[in-house]
Image 1: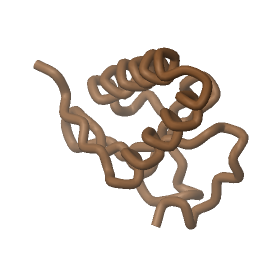
Image 2: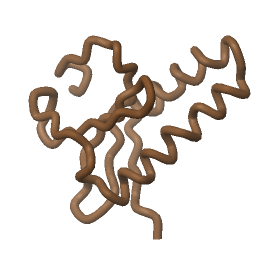
Image 3: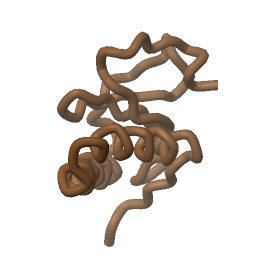
Length: 99
């Protein structure tokens, strides 16, 4: 049985922006890129304590790097996660991004 993944509206917007950016050069590679974080998100949902705790950004928040991006999520009680954001690792990451 797959672990639950709940995606916030903002995380879906983040993924769409990433896809749009990569698709400027190649829709093929944009589609291919999206499959990689999706597989990592599913892995994290099954083992939701793997990421680094990020209490300085928001209560209960964890992060996990995926290539040049960082997945931000909150673990759910038993298994699964609530995907909060997917941001480029070079971005200035501040608490306001998680309100």
